Image (cartoon, rainbow, N blue to C red; front, side, top):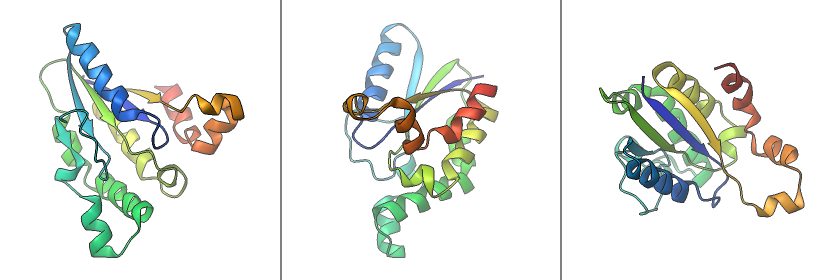
Length: 165
């Protein structure tokens, strides 16, 4: 079964940079790895994704067609991915032992106002061996405790499930 490294964290915490660096490191050590962009609003050009959610749904189009702001548009896009998970499942198929690196969006509303990301991660557990990596800005280490940060960011949504795996 292929592996999936799910990279989450707040906006600007370096998720895309981490995904690119991890991909390069794995390839340098002879592992087959592929980055999948799951941020429909991403404008990053750090890496060329193996698959891109913007093939399925684009944030700018959703915002325009449904008159939504950026956060509402992102929530819609994640629900759309949840409902159309077969698109991602197809991308995760590989006969090789591939490590997929999934670059998730970082808006807090995706963790607090919808269960779409939790559903997506649960579905990932059925088709891959997942690993969850949460990044955060080291600045937060000085101003709040990690426990409060974890709760405020909403990663506790996934903690129970991933500890059971």
